[in-house]
Image: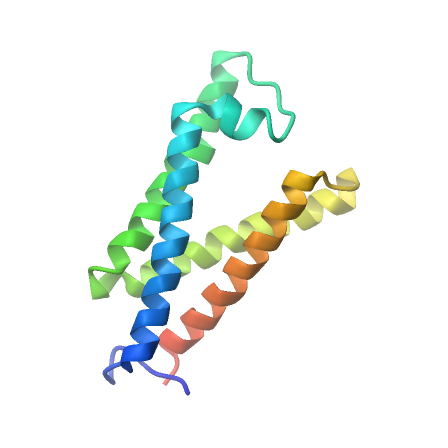
Length: 142
């Protein structure tokens, strides 16, 4: 059943499921983002075998993996409190997961087989994307 949250009050079960998705996704994004802000070498460079000895490399990891990811997660969490941000939070999740999944697929084609860290991340991102797309349609279609 599709519900337009702008025109019809959502069912309690739908609100709970949507809220759980945004909370879990937001917490994961904030946790990973803060880890990358605080220690980009351990959070990103080591698991992905990336060199990060230069300050500019660590800056790039802190900004992209840390700052942007933390900000996205905070918007997702805020969307659980401010109803006006629900679609924004959902779209941020879908955009991020789409970018992560598509980037990994292109990397698989161009760069070859993945390591276990990437395989684990990929399947988590697929799950996040599927649920995100589902909730965008549930939220926006009448």
